[in-house]
Image (cartoon, rainbow, N blue to C red; front, top):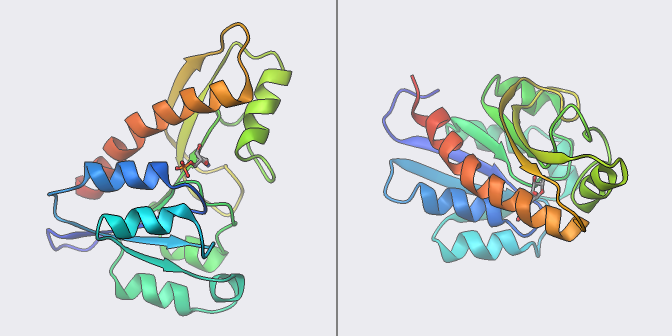
Length: 192
Ligand code: GRF
């Protein structure tokens, strides 16, 4: 962590970016510089961030995986915390190891269930419902070199009700995410 009072937060997101927006809104007025990164040029998250005067950058796969450029950029920004908020690419090991206990991921199930490679978005909710689970939820965890595997920081549950669909479950999950993630991000940034 840098020792200045001003913190630097990177949010990686691939799509809609509702969680990124909630974090940005929650941190308004706090001593945090926020930088949004996306792997999709036209991801709505980029527009959303810029509308909040947050710098939003796009990178392609080569820039992401093959070079030290992104890492150098993050280090140059003195990033204290990286939040993967709906980010679909696996983070290269050299970036993970550069941010020990400084990178967290949001996953829309109660890990270790329904995690791992290929388990994202509607596929997760579909699998949960097909298995006849009575509850689902969210997990926020530190990122290590395996998919959805690092130390768990927070879990929150929701009941699965009669006639639940992947769409209705996704809504409940988003509600939990929007409630918990911004608060945890603030705590991690300003603790210690
Ligand atoms: C969230 O449900 C998150 O758990 C998952 O992707 C979704 C992203 O939603 N990994 P949004 O882009 O923040 O709206």
